[in-house]
Image 1: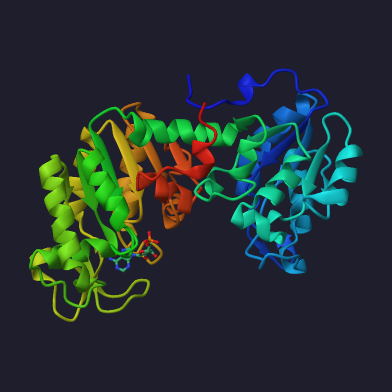
Image 2 (image 1 turned 60 degrees about the vertical axis):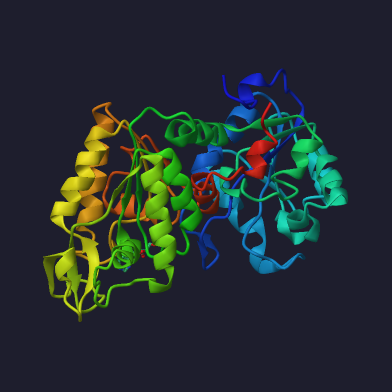
Length: 398
Ligand code: AMP
């Protein structure tokens, strides 16, 4: 029984006006949507509501307009792609509140779908202003939030509306929350976390939360250098935040007192240039040449990571183990991702990953379909990993 209401809890919604917050913040180049992943994610909720005879009214933001209409940020550009993914007609209204929205909604047939213009064309959206929330709420009988990726923000269409209308999680939101619950909320132990990426500074809260919750924390990527340096290891020209040595040591101490094993690289692949196929060698972390930088963790380190993945029942992953965009420094990330995928397919591991470059890294490894769940949410996934309550989720709780 989830802690929030889902579409299963909706009664008869025939002819009801359902406001659905979706994430349509898709990449666009030259007037065309270049990646429809986000649209595909929200399609099941829209189709289900439409099949049940609701008037489906989509609310979304697009880009970062400055609080007023800007042609560049009109959601009109996504309409044909949403239609193509849904295989249904999608109407469009040039405003998300007021007469334009109301008359478009009046004209909607049972099961009809309408996309309202960018919510961020009104200042009240990001400020969660009561008058704006009321104007949005006037267009609906029910609120469904299917935009987990926007749930870390307390905006009118992500948080405010749930105070005015009966609120439900859409199917994507539901899947995301259920996967996250399995990942860190109520996970099967041992729980292993892999955190990589460029810098410690962007992930301090995340690391501090994880050491309290997981049995082993693998630290890879550029941020591992900061931890190695904090322990007196010379990392040469590697990316390293020397000013965070105290923070790194504090995190190590917290891990120790919480009984969390920290897994740092024991070897690395070093190069003199940050470019694909740069001349490289594998060295122990105690022998990084002064003029070289570590761009990937080495094979011994991968063995240690994979041993933990084998031992673990649950894996939570954010950030690559190395500079995965340039070969051969993608090797460790690919090897660990493949191993996690195998363990997941064998039914031995629940694997949850997400946040920024992680999705790209796992796509690159060709394992995106084999993980238990890969979140396409960036900021919201990270805030969840940081253990912070997400306003858009909190209001959905029963
Ligand atoms: P983040 O957005 O913090 O997850 O960082 C991802 C970025 O970290 C990717 O662009 C990687 O190329 C980069 N990265 C990972 N490992 C290293 C490393 N050892 N040195 C430099 N950059 C790295």
